[in-house]
Length: 130
Image 1 (cartoon, rainbow, N blue to C red):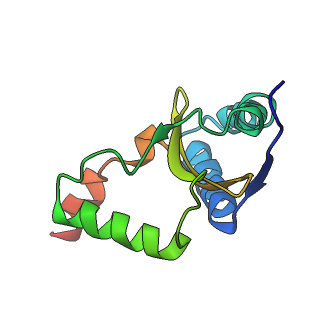
Image 2 (image 1 turned 60 degrees about the horizontal axis):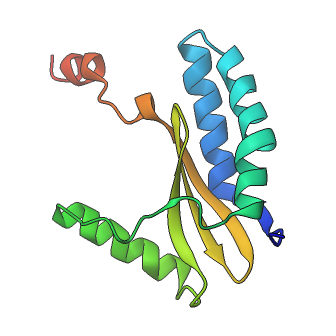
């Protein structure tokens, strides 16, 4: 039998959800936000509650730039030391990436991003230079 772990949403995770809702509304697919909330409550949170080691380890991925290395160092500093059973992990969904920490029997949902939110706004970049 697998132990159940507590899953908590952080303020940043909630802020990211608000951003995703606005992003999907602007794209005209607000129904996708309801689907995301359903997936989080019926699949992601229960999965992480039962199997917190499910996601891939974030810190085992190589940092391929100075910016990434600095970002990882800052993140580790913010989280403090993870206990021997803890880790910083990524849970990959179909259209979203969830960053979470597993520490002392609790899963903390830290961040969530839609895969298309990680793109450049070329129209804004071009219009700003004119």
